[in-house]
Each structure stands twice: as C-alpha cells, then as structure tokens.
Image (cartoon, rainbow, N blue to C red; front, side):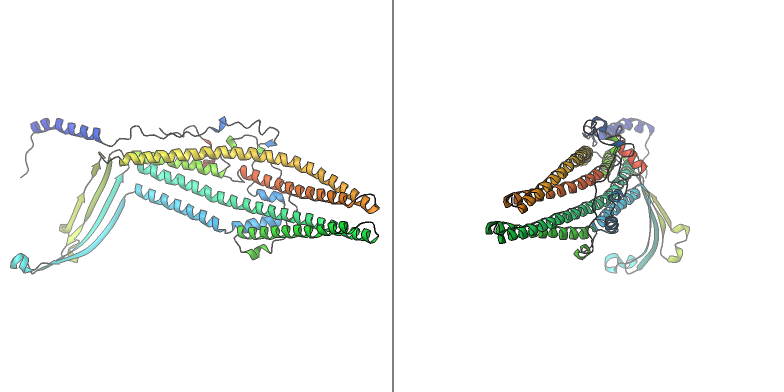
Length: 497
C-alpha cells in the first residue's frame, strides 16, 4: 500500500530536505586554494639587440627546409635523404605520435554515448528435494535480447577539456616527430663535416711527410759531403715516422667518420666504405631574421612542442576541476524476454528501464584535491620547460652568431700565420741547403708550419659546424602550421587561475 503524503507533511519536510542538501553541498570536496604558479615568459622582455648588433639581418632570415643544400655537396644530400627514409629514431618518434593519436580517440569516445546489444538463453532446473513436487523437478528456459544505452552528460566541460588536452598533446608529438627529422639531418651534416675535417688533417699529414722525406734526403746528402753529422740525419729520420703516425691517426678519423655516417643513415659499417671524400665545405652564409626573439617562437620545434604541452596541461586542470562538480549519467535498458525464441517479438515480452543518476563528491579523503594539485604541478613544469626552451633558443642563436663572427676572423688570422710559417720554412730550407743555416732552424720552422696548418684546418671545420649549429638554432627549416605558429607566439591569455 502506497502511503499518502499530504501537502502539510511536504511543507514541514521541505526545510529539512533543503537543510540536508545545503549540508551536503557545504561538506562536498572543494578545489578552493589550488591553482598553478607558473607564468609564461614574455619574449618581448628578452633583449638581444646589442648582442646581435652587426649581424646580417633581414626579413627572410630563417633557414630553408633543405638548408644543408647550401653546402653544395650532392653526396651529402643523398646521405640525408637516405637517413630520413627510415632511421630507427624516426620510427620511434612516429610510434609516439600514433600513441598520442590513440589517446585522442579514447578521449573523444568518453564524450559520446555508448550503445551495446546482448542476447542469450538461460535455462534452470531445481531439484524436488529443495522445492517440492510443485516447483521442483521442472526445467524452465528463456531467451532474451537487450539494448544497453549509457551517456555521461558533460555538464561542466571536463570531458571536452580532457579531449582538447589529448589533441594538444598530439600536436606536440607531431612537432617532436618533425624535430627528430631535423636533428637527424643536422647530425648527418655534422658527421659529414667531421669527415671532411679528417681528410684535411690527412692532407696536412701528407704534406708533412713529403717535407720530412725531402729534408731527410737533403741531410743525408750533406752528411755524405761532410757538412752534417749523424745527429742531423737522426733528427731528420725521426720526422718521417712522426708524419706517418699523423697520417695513420687521420686515416682512423676518416674510418670512424664513415662508420658514424653509416649508422646515421641506418646502415651497417660497410655502407661507410662507399662514402667518398667530401668536397671542400664552405661555411653557409646565413641571414638572421629581423625580429628576434618573437619570430623565433614559432620556428623552433622545441619551443612549439613545449607550447603545446603547456596548452595540454592547462586543459588537464580544467578536466580535474570538473570532477568536483555534480555529474549526471543517463542509463537505459530495453529488450525482450520470452520462454521461446518465437515469442520474442510479442509485445508482452518487452521490458524497459531508465535510470538517470546524479552524483556529487562529498568526502573522498582528499583524492580529488590531490589530483588537481598534481595537474597544477604538471602545468608549472610545462611552463618552466617552455620558458627554459625560449631562453636556450636565444642563447644558442647568440652563441652561434658570435662563433661564426669570431671563427671567421680567427681563420683569416690563422691563414696569415700559415702563409708566414710557410715562407719561414722555405727560407730556412734554402739557407740550410746553401750551408748558411742550421738544421735546427729547419726543424723549428717545419714544426711551426705543421702546427699552423693543423690549427687552420680545425678553425675551418669549426666555421662549417658553427654555421650548421646556427641553422639548428634558428629552427633548422622547421615550418609549423599556421595555427601552431600563432598558438606558440600568443602568450597573453595563457595563465590559469
């Protein structure tokens, strides 16, 4: 029998119900006092005008996507194309991108309703000893077909925020995949420049060996003429194996450079044996963009990826906050049940159930607050990583600009030193041949010339590497999508409170 609730009873009970509801709301979990601390760095406050004063500035100062072609070596172009075709590091980056995309699919599925269908047959026979003759000893069976519908209403946008966070993380993973290709191409260029430097050292060692052999021949002639003693011959003989050792050391560097390139293109060491001597590589002439650092924010893949991760962390905060509010879930079940399969289509066999449910977290031991606090910390970490990436980018650009400028001057000075050392050696050799100079003068001039040539080769190689590093510092030809560049450069509305 259903009790009859009068209006008077409801009138007296309503205040109690409202009081209970107010008490529940007051006691529910709260996010009060929790918020992230990180603040995105404003790039406009980072000045570099004086540091970059005198650099060649222009409106189109960023490297091209295939910036390495400026070195003018077809073999290098082919090696980079081979490496980009299937290096294991690229496969790993692509796999991480697929993982991120799968998380987007999962977050999207959480926002949509679900519908499932199930069917089956149930049979039951209980013993007479349990239920007696009337109910026991009989077999009964039924067939059923049911549709199950459920939908969690996104009242506060938490599920949408989680989906948007997954999308932002996918953008970051996509940029990381492009950055992996840029890093690989730059690594191949650097290894190729190292191979070219090893060949330069080999040339210097060849020239030193030729000088040493020529000096040894002259010294033996002078000893045969009674002008020099065995001491000068022994000194000259010692220069020959020393030059040969330098040849062997340079050859070892050549071999190591070839195997390193073979690994970078994803092949075995034998691939390196097919790599011919690089042509003489000249430093690339690069032009800096006229607007730094703001123009750099959308051109550096590490900055763009870090910016997307800040966005994703902010959306995760929104998703965590939504868990503090009431949630509404809709559940419906409908189907048919009948003893015989043929009766399933009868109207009398149908059943239905609808169960909307509203839930509100009241006490969870601080689990929700701990989760939100963790998301706040994740956001602060993402902001710190972004700020550090911006600072590192500007530092790298400034360092490489200074390096290019300084190494150019050093190379010019060292070339002058080589010319002077060569002239001094030629003069010492002529005086020694004419009998008016000592062999010690020849040894001193020869050692000075060798050292000067080795230093020049090193500076020339550093010039090439500095231009390569500057290309990397300027983004390495990275070209983000228009929305990525705009998002990475917009910092005004990025803070969460």
